[in-house]
Length: 296
Image (cartoon, rainbow, N blue to C red; front, side):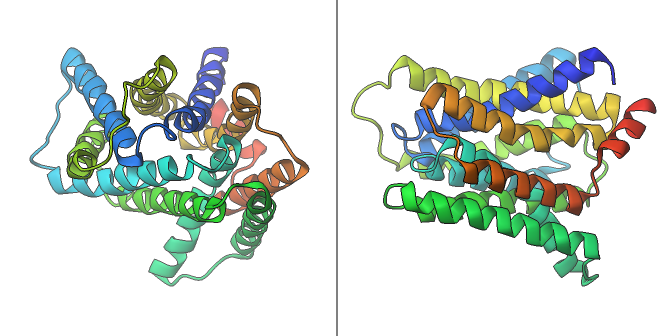
């Protein structure tokens, strides 16, 4: 792996880890639907600009239903659930729960295909469940009322990401940039009716909230997704999967640095258990990463 790609990988992980920080800053002020419709709307505008400037084809009518499904499962629902959870749960915890998506994907895939579980997958799922249980159990004792619900909602958001990934695998003829723009545009249309009836803050939010919303939309949901597709194109899917394991590291780090969130023993132990379980389920290993990197 070249130094440039390594820096892109770290930068991408830092950006997506920062999304939980930005949600924590904006969610207490804006309702979840208003926050998310601004996020996906800004992302759609940014990505539309990229498509127009680069003159890439965008087959909207041909894949309209696909964009609606992907926009619902990969953006509208999980973004809203995470925004709701961010009102109560710390950024570091949300970042770790986000990393459980591959665990949910393995579970859903086995149930759908009725193929059963390999011993490695069973071990990974049990380890992941243990990690989440540890995090949820200890955090629920310190979070304000509604903390347990926030944890459950965040886990549900990760399950949505898993369903979206399984659905996306069934379609191979949609270019990545079309998926990105189509799903964000569809999510905007799906959420607009709910956001229209949501309560608005009594005054214009301060600069911190406005900048957090802009960062969520343009950087975390626009720039970052283009970086991710470039990493896949240059390195392959296996090295790009490393992002999954780095996001919680940055999520915990940003939460501690900018929000003063404590890093307890349960955060580290639960996070390690979740990431190790995810590695077992996905078959990810440092040796596999090195081998894949050498071929690109």
